[in-house]
Length: 164
Image (cartoon, rainbow, N blue to C red; front, side, top):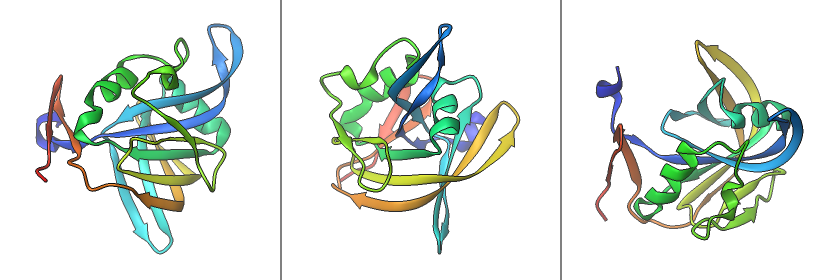
């Protein structure tokens, strides 16, 4: 299946919430890199993201009931790889110098200033899909900021882009 579905556009999903990490309750702003996501409806606007049940962000999304989908430009490859290979249970991903935290306007959640577009989503449904959960969010605000070339994941450690 993996070879058939790639390349997939990369998003960095940001979330704010509380969850247990390393035996204690922590409140954290976090980012998870995803390539499994999709628009679901225009009226009302709905967007879906698929998150592994073992991910720290999974716990935060379930608790906070909100998330922001930050669309990555091609020049965001390094932060995307970092956020996809580090756990927010151990590190503060917004501490990177190439990620600027902004507050969302409609939800209690951070977003990423460098993103080419952001969808602010309120969680409305969860669908179990094996080892992942498909989170369905109602888009409360969308902000298209730039028309830079987007980042696409080709599988493993390979990436590509669109041409602008």
